Image (cartoon, rainbow, N blue to C red; front, side, top):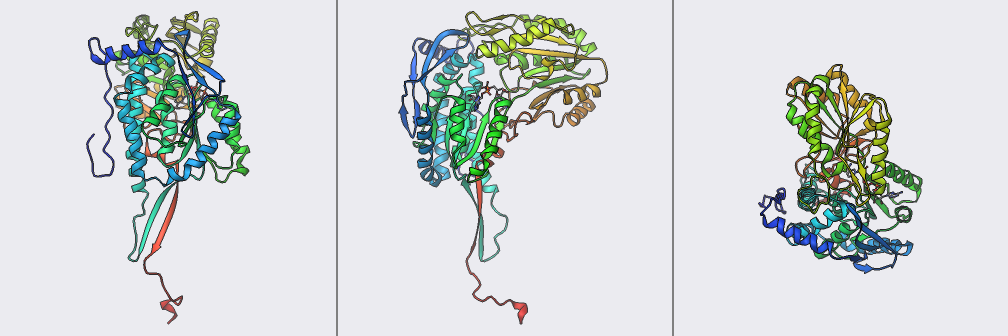
Length: 542
Ligand code: NAD
């Protein structure tokens, strides 16, 4: 890392290991996978820096081999949730008083530990717990999380600098203090990215807040390991409290506290809306107006203009829709292609999809693993069955689902004539791509993309004609918070494409940017007068 003019080092993105055959990284990751597959660990809650074992156990299973229990993780009851809230309260004063440099140093250390000795551990845990290939785990659990830690530290420094007033007339000193919120923050995290599980408690903590972290029940093994990383990096007790448990119970207790000051949430839209409603109902009992930050669902699109590069479109369709089994909030799930292009690329696309290998992620030849759990498997199956039964839809590739050993859903391609069909409008969150072939103008297709789904997360336009690109950028201005031109709509990188969407996709506070950190601070303006007046009379009074 280069050192710029500021306090903290200038961050650069963590390089991505290829794990190509013959590399040392591949061998070492394999050894760690074997080690973790050969043992079953037991993970505690962490409250005020203490490991707490309740004896109420949840199992972390391997989605591609669901009989295999990777870890057992203790679950909070009401007493533990209340103890965690107390621990966050007790830790708050000391943490809020700690300097920005000291807080930042802890997360820079976490980044270096993760880039080094923890890399294989967290990658292997993410591969097994969330059924990610080595590449998908590396860009998530290693690179993106390291980037969140390093870039956020720098963004904090710049944000505090930019908050400062422009003018302090002679005799006065004006400044703005970045106070942490007056209370604690509740971080509720999704299964699909270990990096998000780390970022949601980390970002408010970096800004001086203490946090109750409720992890996803479907990523308990990797998330419990992440909590150990925070501790090894030197995070003081009580700053982040790891509280897995029944989501409704934990949430009810947390949201009923007077000093609940903020929610940092990522997950489905319906859950975020229900949390917002609960906060609204409890509003009168809070000290402050809680900050509500939520990144939620998506129905991400690709639209091609007839001038587009067809090979690039085919590749973007496959990578955008099927990497990590379509379980990225940014995953491509609906595409709009002009008929003439469709006639030319359809067979190639179908045959390319036929080459995609799916199976155990410990076999590095596989491009896809399993979907996360039975509910997700059944949901994909329902949409595929509905398409099979609908006269306006044709399943062109995949469509098979086999849940005997693991939750495997084949990469599926559906051609859909009905522009309002559920698989074109609703989030499926699996490897199911719906294609609508348009016969009318590009402009009509743009209007269709914009109005078809309530979401506004990611989207892509493919075109070589610059007028088409400009028309798409204008017509789809609010259809996506992350908009891609001639690129797939997935794979945002911290420091390069700040991520988030509006409409039903969230509050668009852009994870991994200063915009997000701004939500975790409550500014105090301070004016100091070095030479205060000593007579109330004004000059005009003669
Ligand atoms: P989910 O909604 O099932 O769970 C998210 C979190 O909410 C989990 O911790 C869960 O335990 C908790 N939760 C569930 N019910 C709750 C309740 N009643 N009260 C309080 N908490 C509750 O989501 P998931 O399956 O883990 O993740 C997939 C979803 O996340 C998709 O919709 C995806 O689009 C979205 N996502 C969005 C982004 C983004 O940046 N926009 C990123 C990743 C995932």
